[in-house]
Structure formats: C-alpha cells, structure tokens
Image (cartoon, rainbow, N blue to C red; front, side, top):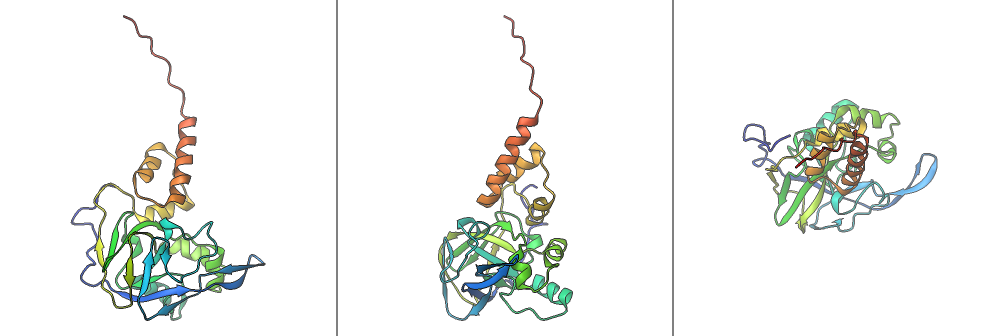
Length: 240
C-alpha cells in the first residue's frame, strides 16, 4: 500500500475526542482451566493519567509475552466499533470492557494505517498493530466463541507506541495524522496474522512499515525462510 492520498486518508480531526481513559488492575482469572492474572478488566478514570513509553501509569499488564511493551504500550478503540459490537452482541458495552486504554469517538480501526499518529495535547501515539484476540478476551466477554467473532468482524482496535509522553483525560480532543510514507493497513496486518502471505514482496512491505517489534521479528524470520527457499542463481561466466 502506498502513502495515503488526500482522497483516501481519514478525515476525523474535527470530531475525534477521548470518551474514556481506562486503567486496569490485576485480577485472577481462569485461563484454559488454569489460574492466571490479567489486567484486561479496565475501568474509566476521571483524572489526568500520565502516558509514558511503557503505557498508562497505573495500568497493569501481566501477559507480557503477548501484550504491552514499548510498541504496544497503549490500546485504543473507537466508538463506532463499540456501537457495532453492542448491536452484534445485543447488549450495552461499557468503556474498557474490550481492554482498551482509550475509548475515542469517531475512530474506526479498519480505516487506520500502520504509522498513523494520534496527537492528544502533548502526547503523541503511533499506530503499530491491530489487536489480535486471545483467550483472555474471550473470558472477559464470557463467550467461548468470541475469538472467531472478533476475527470475522475485523474491528480489532489499535495498538500504539508512545512517540512523546504526556497526560490524557476524558474529553481531550484528538488530532489524527495519517502516515505519509509507504505502509500497510491495520486490516491487512490483522488478516495476515491468520492467513499469512509469505512471498518476498509482501514480507518486505510489512518490514518497511513501522510495525510493532513482535510482528517485525516474526516477519524477519519469515522473510529469511522465504529467501532460503528461492532457487540458487547460477554463477555467471565472466570473460575478459
């Protein structure tokens, strides 16, 4: 995917606003029949919350193998996607139930590209990856089939790295800044997780985008394997 054109880039700046800032404390849950601790149970807070390179101060992450880290420091989810899920599940969904740190009006994750930025006062976030559903999310939603539903819906929300630290609060306006260089869409990255395309061209496109480090390591290995499978080029005879 090339850089966004004026005709295709999102035009959300006039209406984007933080509806809720959500922070989670660790809770014990049963995951695959075994006890585990999770920070997915996030609740809205009214006061300003500091956003550091590691995420929202006070927000706990326990499954550090799959979540958190500087490239997945903040998880954002949009009100239009929440409305869709409320209709799909036939129930009202409170902010934070999907595990997001920031609930934002007007934001549709399927329209976002990797590298897009969200400016909230002095805080700058950069989109690095879509959310990939896990067992903990299904447990939180009390629906064993939720992982399949989440995949099919393709409304995953967005993980972000923190480019510039700051503070955020419910009601803050959000300026959306499309990424200007060549990149991939969040939807393509989401689909690729489940049905990866392992050709050299696609892998290099992913690696040329500012994707999260977990995905970068995976794609680098896949590219290495793809290049190893290519037939060796015969040596050319060079004569003087």
